[in-house]
Amino acid sequence: MAEDLVLDTAIRDWVLIPLTVVMILIGVLRYFVSKLMRSQQNPDAKVVREGQVVIRARNLRAGANFIPAKSFRARRAYFSNEENGLLHVPKGQGQNPQAQMFSDPNMAMDMMKKNLSMIIPQTLTFAWVNFFFSGFVAAKIPFPLTQRFRSMLQNGIDLSTVDVSYVSSRSWYFLNLFGLRGLFSLILGEENAMDDTQRMMQMSGFGMDPTKVQT
Amino acid sequence: MAGHGESEKKSSDAVNDLQTFRAENLQSNMKVIYYSRTFLSIIGGVIAGILGFTGLTGFVLYFLMMAITSVALIAKAKFSIHTYFDSWNRVLLDGFLGGLMSFVLFWTFAYDIVHIF
Image (cartoon, rainbow over all chains, first blue to last red; front, side, top):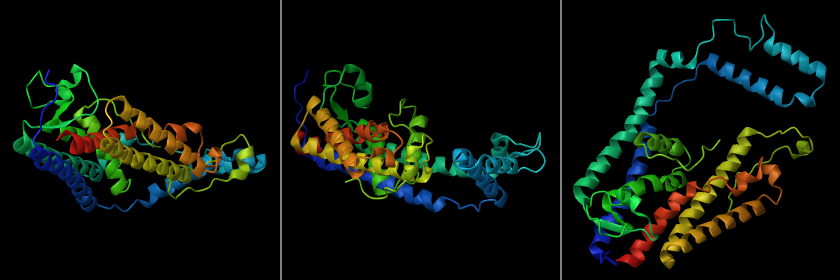
């Protein structure tokens, strides 16, 4: 067990700090690129109307106890009577959302764009890190970890005697990838910063996502 | 510390057992919590790194930081949590684990820059 590795200061100046800065800048760049690529679609008038009706119905349900029973019944009939209620969908006409999604090519296109704008910079950065910084011991985690974390933290250096808390440059990249989410949501606003990373988590199969989905 | 955007709910109806929360306002309050927690976890990480905490002390600092955030948020809500949030857990626990990753990252970063090399 090597007690203390002596790391060159040049590693800090030319690996650790540049890597982190580049990760942040790429995150910002990706945000703006995806903002540019996002096509704003005009919402369909029918869809908007339906949504508003649903909201009104929900408000009615929530406030049902605050209005007289008679007016509640009148409103309920307005929403849900059999002939011309606003919420009444004739049998067999309701479409399931999945079919809707397939019939609308725009939606699939949007999703693909989003995914691409995630995958491309990620792949490029990873290739860049691999190419430039492979094999550096770049950092040290200030708390002890067990051996099981070795494959996670020392990705790219094959030394089994190095203490587990030392982090290779490639793993520092991964740490950045997951840890900078909070920073991004601070500097870029909450706009899809969160669900992007959540999707990324699912994609890369990193397993548990500690944050609950913010409702 | 808690920032702005804390908007009110019709508190006059709070006597009723029916919950009347306006979803957008609740969401904006939650966002404020999320932001302050993220911000403080990053700041806390940098502090822990610069001070050179290792091991358990760093995590203790994180818990302390989060506790301070909770107290500050409660104070910001003028100690009437139910005017702004629908449960105590929102103030005390939400975003607790989410900030941990940022905390560890910035802790490591600052610690490495200051102490390792």
